[in-house]
Each structure stands twice: as C-alpha cells, then as structure tokens.
Length: 430
Image: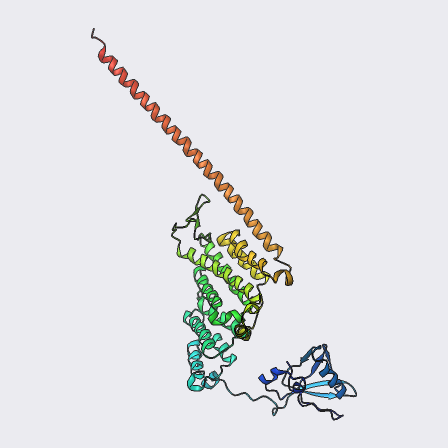
C-alpha cells in the first residue's frame, strides 16, 4: 500500500502526495496524514531528489514499492544520506472516536451483551453504521469457558453481521471466533471426556462448512489444524475409555469375526451415541479438508462476473490444506473408517486438484507410509479373522459329526437291547 507522503528537505523538493502521482486507486480507502519511507527494489531511499522521484514514477509498473509503517515522521538528510524516524507529534496522529462497545463501557462484557449493542449500533434506525473489527474480536474474546450459549451467540453474530451489515470477516476475527466457540463448547471440568470434546469440535467444524458464517473466506489453516487436533484427542479419549470407534463410512460396525455388519443397503445397525458422534466427526474433518482444497483451487475463475466480484470481495485467505492438515485428517479417518476412507476422502481429492502438481511436491511420504501400514495391518487382521472363522467352522462341523456319531451309536445300542428282550421272550421255559 502507498501512503500519503509529506516530507521536505534542504533542496526544497516537496512531493505532497505520491499516491496521486502514481494513480493508486486504493488510497481512497485510507486517510493518511503521516510520513512514510519508500523501498525501491527492497532498498531504502535515503536521498530523494526530483530526478529519483521521476524515475520511481516511470518504473512504477515494473517495480515493487513498499510503504513503511505508519505513525512515523520521516526526516531526510541529503549530504550524509541518513534516515531518522521519530514518533509523530500528537497533532498528526489519527483521531479515532470510541467504538460502540467502548461507548457502552459495560462492567461485565459477555457475547450476549456485546451482540445486543452491536445489533443496535448497526440497525437501520442508526443508518446501518459499520461495525469495527475490534468490536467483533472483543465479542468473541468475551466468551466464557463451558458456556455453550456463548458459542451459539458467536455463530449468530457471524451470520447476522455478514447478512445485515455487510461485515467482511478478516483472518484475526475468524481466529477469535473459532477460539471463542471452542472455549465455550468444551466444558471446564477437571477431566473432560472425549464425547464432550467431540461435540464441541463438531459444532465448530459445522460452522466452518456453513457458508453463511463467512468462516470459509477467512479461516486460516493453522486454526483448522487446531480443531482437528482436538478431534483426534477426543477420539483417543474414547478409545481409552473402551469405546469401539471402528465405525465404517457406510454406517456399519466391525463385528468380532472381522466382518462388517450392516454394510449392505437396507441393513440397519444400532450405533451407540459415541459411535455416531465419532462417525460424524470423521465426516466433518474430511469435509473441511475438501473445503480447503476447493478454496485453493480458485473457484472464482469459473464464476460469472457479478458472483466473482462478490466472492473476491469476501475472500481473505485462500490457502489450501497443509501437510499437517492432511496428516490429521488421515489419522482421524484411519482410526474411525480405516485406510480406505483416508485414501478415498483425503488423499485422492488433494491429488486430484489441478494446483497440487504445479505448486506442491505432492503428499508427504510419511502420510502415504502411514496409510500403507494401516492397510497392511487391516489385511493381517482380516486374514487372522478369516483363519479364526474357518477354524471355528471346522470345530463346529467336527462337533456336529461327533453328535451324529453319538446319536447313531445310541440308536444301535437301543436296537440291540430290544432284540435281546424279544429273543428272551421267544425262548420256551424249561
């Protein structure tokens, strides 16, 4: 960004506004009254005569001009080519009025109180005043641990401010929203079991997948990784409690003999609440991974002009899933649905995206090795289960044969006894 430049030196050269000379249209969004320093090809310009300025203006299209931080005053000394930066005097500092929450000055700020004040501030009665990003961050940071109502208030604020106030969620606000919802959805007990943790993670992942909240446009990959870490932790906690988390993607569960019950269409299997929650968490983790892949694929290129303009206005972060994201999603899929789920719903969509071969080196080898190891282990379990089932069937057949032989022997014994009795009756008495 180019700031309004106001400086002068001993030679009397004064350029009031370099932005006007360069016709930089984004200057209208800012109000600058402070000085800046300009970097030309990553080198500071310590002397700035008229010829140098003309060269900068001519090479604007082919050069990189980077502005220095604001709120500083620049003084130039040409003979020694030194640069000194001092704090701007109070008269030059930007005047900023109090925000809506600062005016309210509440003794105790909660998301419920904050959303009420901001709704009133941005209502039609107040000419739909714009909402400050700092107020939204304060709303999210005021969420209390273990209060699920606060998380729902944050989700409501995301939807309403985006729909009614044209609020564009930035990356800092998305991070604060996710952290606030996670803090409120997870109870603050001394010991938190996996079910409650997974419920909170599922709520947050659903809000990310929901386009109306705007988290799709601004949530960072590291924030998603944090939520997936909590999902993995919750599943491990359920495993420690003895819950069978091997729930397959088609709604079936693994039985004791290594087969899948309810895998066919029309079959119904009663899953426990924990198993249904684990299955839902796996599907949400896979859905968020696919969402990040879609966001990185530049979907605006396939949109019409108006939709593209609206999309580019809202998008703040267009990063795709990192290798850590793929690793977490693969581990969750392997623990719940097996390696087939990880390969089909995590690795294949990533490898199928057009940008992975251009901008990345492919999936990390450690992830592929983990899936291959899981497949090998699953195959060994299937072979062992099949051998155990064959052995059990052979034992059952042998037992059935023994029962038949026993019945046959018993029948022969009874028949011989009857023959003896008949022969004894037929003999004449002496």
